[in-house]
Length: 142
Image (cartoon, rainbow, N blue to C red; front, top):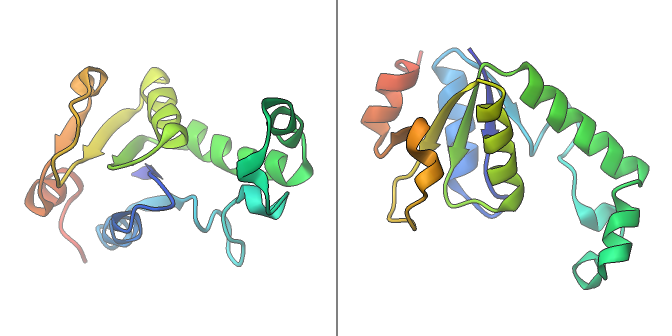
């Protein structure tokens, strides 16, 4: 299965989920390493002071070649995936990616190993609350 993993850069579990899915035999898109030898997109590549941007600066930055390239990698992977795995906790981009994938009719899985605020819109997804459930859904590592 071709899987898109959506999460936060701050979520330490994300990297382990990518490795586990690959060991289960799946093709996995990792936004932290979208192509061999290339790290994932970071606003800091455009401007180290990105966190101080006003809305108009943010809007302009979306047209920067690095932002265009980063978006192209992510959206192509989303469009071509069979399933999206949302690893909680996550932020706005991952939530958007997950909703986009589900809206395209892809399978949705939510990895929630710790207490999180409930989200009604996850109702149509499969919520995985342990590694046992994870391996039931994706197979055993090889």
